[in-house]
Length: 54
Image 1 (cartoon, rainbow, N blue to C red):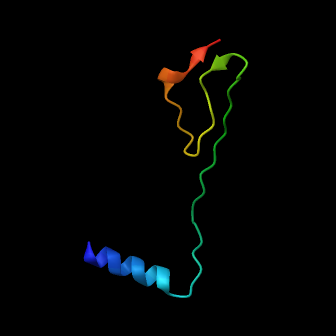
Image 2 (tube, rainbow, N blue to C red; image 1 turned 135 degrees about the horizontal axis):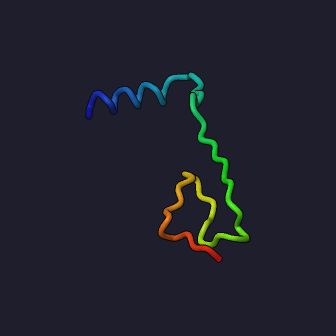
């Protein structure tokens, strides 16, 4: 854990830019006029137990 904490401190305190190498993208293809219980969320996970047919 100490090694990871030192690595994080080095990464955050040096003058360098951090560029994310991956960005989540979602294609939410759902007809909300036919399905209920679906709401957008940051991680794009929708538990099937909350979805229902209108």
